[in-house]
Amino acid sequence: MKMSKSPWLLHYDASSCNGWDIEVLAATTPVYDVERFGIFNTGNPKHADILVVTGGVNAQSSSVLKQIYSQMPDPKVVVAAGICACDGGIFKDCYNISGGTDTVIPVDVYVPGCAVRPEALIDGIVKAIAILDDMRDKSMEHAACEVHYDSSPEKEE
Image 1 (spheres, rainbow, N blue to C red):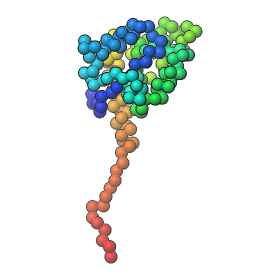
Image 2 (image 1 turned 180 degrees about the vertical axis):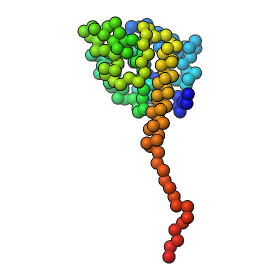
Image 3 (image 1 turned 135 degrees about the horizontal axis):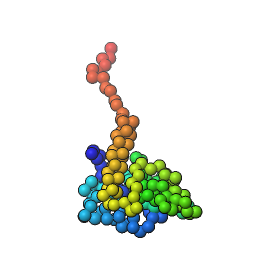
Image 4 (image 1 turned 90 degrees about the vertical axis):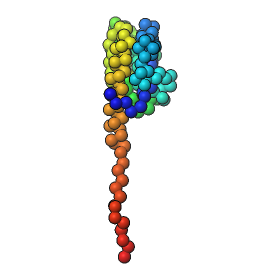
């Protein structure tokens, strides 16, 4: 896996149970050590490369999620972690749940489970890093500027 820079991760809890918060924090402990991949947790969306969303999306979290997503610099990757973030989970038919994360913002990686084990979350984040690297490579291809100089100087007459 190629990694052009260490990605920074932002976790947003749309409306999940606290079990998910524990699993996300467990992935950052020395037992699982997500930092071995160069991943760091940040609290600022302007510094984040990967957004990890947990919980089903409701009316209150929908606008916040859109705002966080819009503040993140491009390229960015979104990981829907847990069955509630993927499609609303067991709460998808409730009056206050709009559905999964993809009802509000585009999702690149889905990590199903209730609650997802830290190993599965790390696997999803590693897949997100690969997607992020592909996006960066494509943006660099479009940003490339070539300048060709004539090797022989022109003679003035």
